[in-house]
Each structure stands twice: as structure tokens, then as C-alpha cells.
Amino acid sequence: ETGVTQSPTHLIKTRGQQVTLRCSSQSGHNTVSWYQQALGQGPQFIFQYYREEENGRGNFPPRFSGLQFPNYSSELNVNALELDDSALYLCASSLGGPGQSQGNTFGSGTRLTVV
Amino acid sequence: AQSVSQHNHHVILSEAASLELGCNYSYGGTVNLFWYVQYPGQHLQLLLKYFSGDPLVKGIKGFEAEFIKSKFSFNLRKPSVQWSDTAEYFCAVKSGAQKLVFGQGTRLTINP
Image 1 (spheres, rainbow over the protein chains, first blue to last red):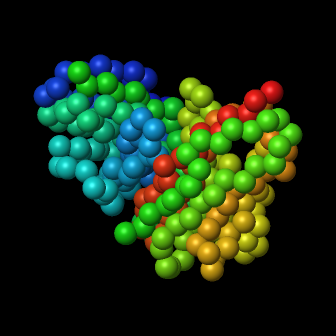
Image 2: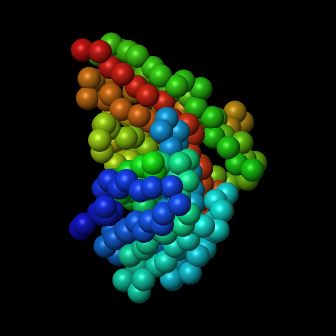
């Protein structure tokens, strides 16, 4: 079984630009969550997607948006990038819907640097 | 709001020493508890998890954790650490909602 794969692994963007990060979930997993991990901090929940709809959101502004596709892969889009958006962005997949607590499998992350 | 507190930011031990990393959470309802490890340059990996039942859970690589409900704690332990245990360790909590709430992490350095 394949794990969670994320692309790209590293990215440098200029303040004000837009970025799209991609995630392929582990085989058989139907739920995808995105986390932001700033340097020296624990991951913080951005949002989760289940059945192609956003299902739960953390304390992130609307310029953070996402998509989930029929094959359960997902994208994270960030508009109007700010310097503080520089972080490791983690994707995690799991099996189960709302209210079901399952273990998450994490990808290696995309390291985004905003200059 | 849920929160997770890991008291030790950086722990330095010698090989064969015993390890205990503290984790406390604030949430009064039913929770699921996790410990993740992040080796240098690698992705987060699940060490162990507690959903229900025996509060002493055993994970991979000789790690274990004890859920003490009255103390809202889920401390990670290992009787004898190895140099390869050098990593960042994260405690996380999930309640009925979907999200994992992580602690700030504890960086563990094992000196050979």
C-alpha cells in the first residue's frame, strides 16, 4: 500500500503570490486533512475534506482554501501569500467520516518559503 | 478550546537512560490520544494511540504511554533509549471533532 504523497517538496514564493499544494491520500483512505507546521511548533489544523466537501476548519483565514477530488486526492490553495505563511504544510489521510476517530497517516510535507 | 501542553521542549539523554515525556491536555469529554514521532527529515509517524480500554498502551520501538484521566495526562515512556530515538515527539488529542490538536513538541537528543 502506498502512503501519503505530497508535491512539491519545496517551494519558494513571493509575498502576494498564490500557491497550490497537492496531496495523494493513502490507498483506501477517503478523508484528507491539512496542517500547517511553523518552525519549532506543532502542526496546526487548517481544514479537512470528506466526500469532496470541507468538513471542519481551523483558525485560518478564507485565503486558505482547498479541494478534494473523486479519487480522494486534495489540493491546498493559499492566496495573497504573507511572510508568516512560510511553514511546512502537512497532509494527512484517514479512513472514516465525520465524528469517526481514526488514525491519520501523514505525508512528508511541502516546505513553503515566502520571501 | 482544546489544548495540549508538552512541558519539555528539549530533552537530552545518554543511551540506555530511561525516558518520560510529559503531555497534558485540556478537554473534559471523551478523547483519543496519540503520540507521533518525527525523525530528522522524515514525516510524522504514529508511535501509539489510545482510544479506550487498558490505559497503558504499547507502541512501536519499545515506547509506551499511560492515560491518566484524572490528571488529563498521557505521558510517553521508554525504559532504555537508543541513539536512533533522536527525534521530535508530538502529543496530540482528538475529540469528537475531526481535527488533531498537537502539542508544541519535544525535541529529544540521545548522546551515544
